[in-house]
Image 1 (tube, rainbow, N blue to C red):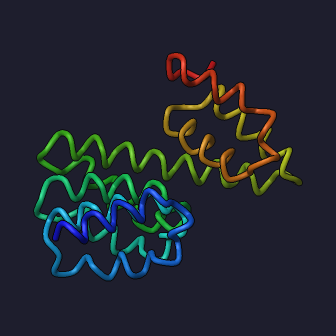
Image 2 (tube, rainbow, N blue to C red):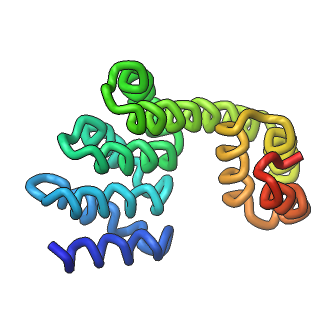
Length: 180
């Protein structure tokens, strides 16, 4: 168990470099102990959109009997991009129904991030080029809700060099988390 947890954590920390191993990680969900399921969910979240094919497995973990696993699964779903939209309704329902306050908060925040990601993706699709997309994301960082800011900041990171001129905007978020 400890070796699997360590390997999953390491793959997650490698980020997109470990993307080719997302399927191997997801295959370990069934029959694994709590610590392993938790580590795998967290690792898949860190792999971001490379984990999109495993959104259904992550959504299934939202109902895991252990209280920590659904939290990691909710966060992971908020990072897989548009693939999570099919599970938005479940997250929203659980954010109202679950008996544990912490889980409701995580479910609600993850749902907000997924909705915001959809908005950012739509704004980026409407932009004709990378710089226009970066400008649209930077506008959201400066004036969006918390979930929209998270989604827009992630999108700026994915835009790479096109978003480099907006580094000061992101750095402003470090001071007090308000990005203004």
